[in-house]
Amino acid sequence: MIPVITIDGPTASGKGTVASRVAEALGFALLDSGALYRLTALSAIEAGVALDDAAAIAALARTLPVRFEGERILLGGRSVQDAIRQEAIGNAASKIAALPAVRTALVELQHGFRRPPGLVADGRDMGTVIFPDATLKVFLTASVQARADRRYKQLIDKGFPANMLALLQDLKERDARDTERAVAPLKPAEGAYLLDTSELTIEQSVAQVLDWWHHRAGTLGK
Ligand code: CDP
Image (cartoon, rainbow, N blue to C red; front, side):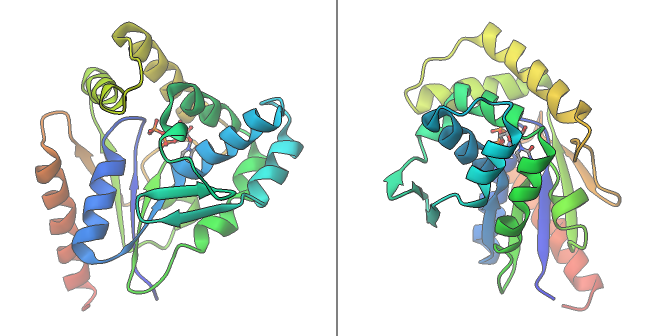
């Protein structure tokens, strides 16, 4: 069986960075499942589809013309890895992610990322819904303030405008939507290792996950 490490957690908890460094350290493939929701949201907005039109958005999700090439994400041949990081797209992604038909439409695409020698999957429901048989499940958290600080820095670094008060408000709304939705709500999977990264550097967080992984892999005789 191809091993999977799932890293779930709330917005701006540092999942993305930790997941990509863990994948790199182990030579594993990486699934940024949030990018799929963001790509779907971008496609919907560009096609002028209303964000509550579940059937139309699910159809877009099922046929996303997406290609991942290292850091680049191509949508119909166009580089969109920066465009999908805008707050407006993140907010739209969080809205369409609450639609059950959209989540179902993205399942197969996500399973396709499981390739030898292994996969690190980052998202909200990787350990609970998409890869329930994962070898190691991690749930990353951080305080709201730590997450707002990180998101602020991320946006400024990418040259996007950012306002701290608006970001804090956004984070709280997104947390509420992610944890309260009926389908695949954000919660730690059974058996998940909890990691609060508020006071940890990225290196410390990555080292902890790798430590758990080597321990799990050792236990399983790999
Ligand atoms: O960067 P941030 O953590 O805010 O977002 P993301 O991981 O790129 O995901 C964008 C949105 O997609 C999130 O706000 C979630 O609502 C949604 N999402 C989801 O529902 N399930 C996933 N597995 C991944 C993301």
